Image (tube, rainbow, N blue to C red; front, side, top):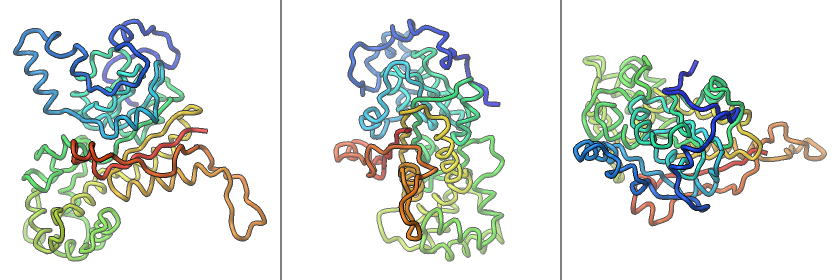
Length: 364
């Protein structure tokens, strides 16, 4: 059973009023894009200067600038009373935007550190925000345990967060030394160190090719097996230096980029979790509910694109059929078949948005 961090109002049955929540919300009918620094939850409400300074330093240290914020708000239309499942809560940036536009948000994350931060950051929204620790692949179980049959939106911002990348202790970065870990959920027993030091050469080649599209997969796998025969590979820089010895540098990217991506995806079962959550979205989204997925590499985007196209075609046709037939998998309408990307201004402001692609589907 998924246990919420704190009690929440029974949104499914609408037993609680919105009075306290409404008093905290700004006036106006337009979508609100501001990050909330001016909302009144800053210096004016802190108990003393030192406490306030500490709070805002912590907020800046973990600040999550939501990518494609305007486009996500336009797609999800988080008007008052809508229930939205944010399956990748992270620093809470996207959830805050949704909450400021009067939606109710179930914020899910498997990283307890991120969950703790977002809970503090979004505390002023009261019962409109519910943080839950879990994996978005279990969206159906999470909602059922909360007594919620359907939601009006699902948002997934895939991949590793900036905070996780920037913290060497989490073991995601090849630029700073740290333990070879890469677990998004530290409760998991299987880490990058386990994978690198125990998986066979052929299996390493497979994930480097499939998950990282690494052309030198065989060379890297062979070097890993050779090195670990003498001593286990235990640190991020140890692995990064190993890869750099056998993969030529041909661009501005670090030679270990694709290998690290492959290992992270395998350790956390990221693609399997995405495929599972996509299929479950069909049952948990209310009619006209919005599915919005942010991806950052071609593997994720390909899975989302194929799912949405397969599920949005009312009819299917095959050469051996005399005429098209109804698609039994039809479940969504697509506002656009093309992925939405950041504009030049956003990529200049936030370099990590460069590879972002947003795909949107609306439940039929």
